[in-house]
Image 1 (cartoon, rainbow, N blue to C red):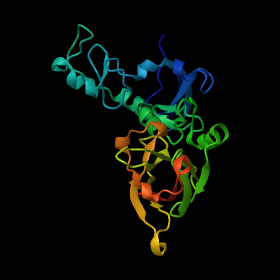
Image 2: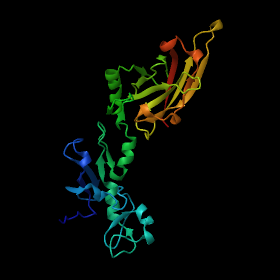
Image 3: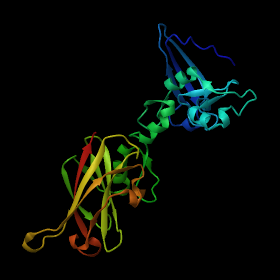
Length: 300
């Protein structure tokens, strides 16, 4: 079926409903809306439906982004794929020949928008930037750190889940202020919730061997590719008072790692505070660490 295209010299606002089975049940309607805009002296509106793969390169299946190229036979390819083709010739038709730029498609894919389907986000994002946005979206689903639990939800939902379902202690933390915790060696996980921006942090810990009973770190529960702000944690542990009321202390400065799966972050990705035996209080399974945590928010 042919569709009459609007004059490219007039402003056009188009809502394009892209059929996408993956969107079924997440935002209603069974499709994802993409908006495209133009500029000029007359304003019109139109709604069309296209298959989602029409916005993707047929060679690599990645979303088109400028520059997009077209062969003499009308076949499209992204710039990355054209550079990899033998002699930069079209391999899909008999006409072959060199690819040339396609300004109309460039303009279309530059203005096409699709809504982020993460619960509570709804931001309209340029289609070819959608995956980058979703990998850094502040509401990207994060997984519960408790082994065996399949819960996934936006970071703001995790504190309630961990407290209500797993009885994990939740502590309110204020940036640049010290929070003191008595952390059991047997179960060191503690959730820290910053009311200022709704950010959640998880204190994680375990034995690293080599005679160290416990090593502790802090993980920010959010998408790993998140933009600023970033966070730095100063953590230290005080031992029981010794002669002359002196107290031994160990300290660590931690560039806080962000992760959507805070319970499975690789040890190599974390900086730890290692706490020796003599700094523990109590005995046996009731041993605890007197842990102090200060989280600083870095906005630049």
